[in-house]
Image (tube, rainbow, N blue to C red):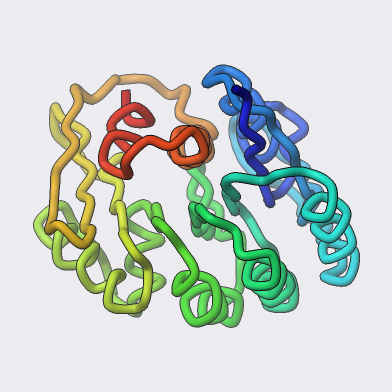
Amino acid sequence: MTFTVLSVAGSDPSGGAGIQADLKTFSALGAYGAAAITALTAQNTRGVTGVFPVPATFVTDQLEALFTDLDVRAVKTGMLGDPDVVQAVASSIKKYRVPNLVVDPVMVATSGDRLVSDDTVAVIRDRLIPLATIVTPNLPEAAALLGWETVTPDTATKAAEELRSVGAHAALVKGGHSEGDEAVDVLADPDGTHEYRAARIRTRNTHGTGCTLSSAIAARLAQGAPLRDAVGVAKR
């Protein structure tokens, strides 16, 4: 059986991140992908040069059209642009009682570009994360959400646990921005904490990796996988 998974995110014209990466990932894992676009971007694999936000009212219109037609089993959010868009997305997710929500709090691109304002960070933390099945920040994003100066591999477990205290059912703090021979992601969930380890791949081709990971988690949750198994499949 094919399940519908919805990406609510920005568009990447280079095809490596955003809704383009999400739809490819859903398809690769046997899920039917739908998308509500929150922003147009001018970007490529080297960086973001422009962002054109979609008005929050039109984001709501897209979500209404999708939720009233498709049997959406999971939603993955990516770049949400501004506080009004975050509020609109949170309201729709509550209204339609989305069973699985993966929040990829896209705030800092792989290239290092800051993508959202401090106000948007606050609304993501206060309105969206409490609805999340799992939130998947990288180290800089975890620091932004918690108001910490930095999150390091040594403090990743504490950061994941703190994000659960904000209201998320589970938090996966990703270690891709750290150094070392292994890329270590730390999950905090109701059963405790768990590390996902993999050999670090020495490559510059990392554009959209966070989008792909969170989309893979959403696809597997939609298909009924337990959370830790869904994260393990996504990591691989």
